[in-house]
Length: 245
Ligand SMILES: [Zn+2]
Image (cartoon, rainbow, N blue to C red; front, top):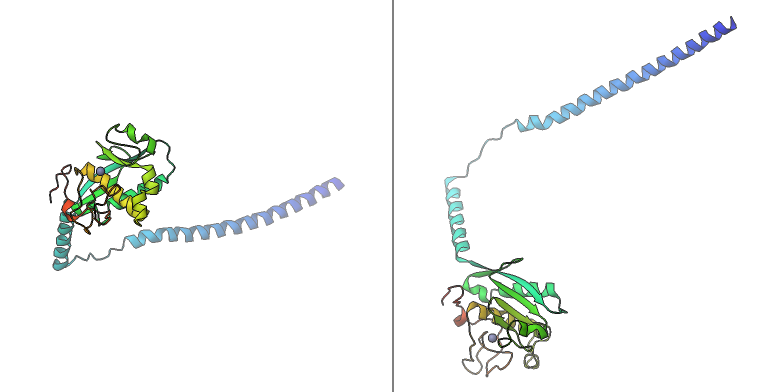
């Protein structure tokens, strides 16, 4: 008897608890359903928006013509600029900042005062360029050519445009004594050695007080001319690229 009552109480409590549990579970379920339907309608919004078609607006005839002329003009400009590719390497022990060497050389080659005036754009490539620009330890210069290069200066041998690291870092005594800046020496040496690759030999001073030709050996003797790191107008030709004055 006592046992039966206890069981009844136990069952009653358990049922009540279950009831409470069921009630709260149902409330949560309703809330979930309502959130889900709101999410769904939000998700459908972009579809609804994209189904609304905007009217197509055509360019007026005058604008179409102007755009076509502009495109044609641009193509003509692009077509007249020759791209010359080059890769860059080093030889021996390099103590100069190699990244700076590459950046400075590219800036010189594409400078509006330089060989770019021939309508040429110089593009550095990882390998297989039309020429190779090299920064070389001074003592390694003669490995390019025992007769064409020496440890004092820079040189050009075939596809190699070789810059002597000592000159890159310190120019020459005569340049420095005349107050020439290192940046201008770097412009000059890149332009001069690339000039050899372009097909130029050496030039001489055209008259006292005149600007030196970039192909003059300015590192050695100015012959009465003024230092000039850029090619003269009369030097804007290249047998290598088939460009005449
Ligand atoms: Zn030379």
